[in-house]
Length: 149
Image (cartoon, rainbow, N blue to C red; front, side, top):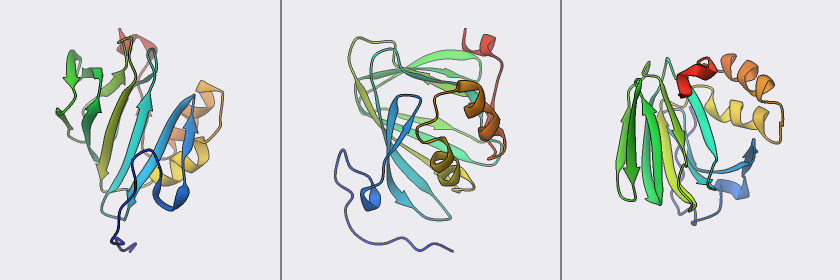
């Protein structure tokens, strides 16, 4: 089991200096243990993660700056700075920056499962179909494109 180390992971940086570029979005790991995985995202206007399901993890988003539009269990909702989004395992969800300003958010999932390994494999990939294929091998299942409407 991976133990949680005490300390601070500064804003705009990743734990151990690490970051991932996943289809143009930058992710910074903040805390990594078997029981939880926390990461910061910085989404420019127009960036998004399509609707998907984590069958074995609960996920949370704390919006720190800006606004996210979310498709949560088939319904559109908005989360603003300071809002916490709760997404129980098995619930379809996707997030979209439909605003004209960047959005920064802290995500975390519990338990970590295969998510850090997934991000390591997705880093710098440019083919969305390959991202979907690899994600399915790591317990993240993307829905068909019409789920994003």
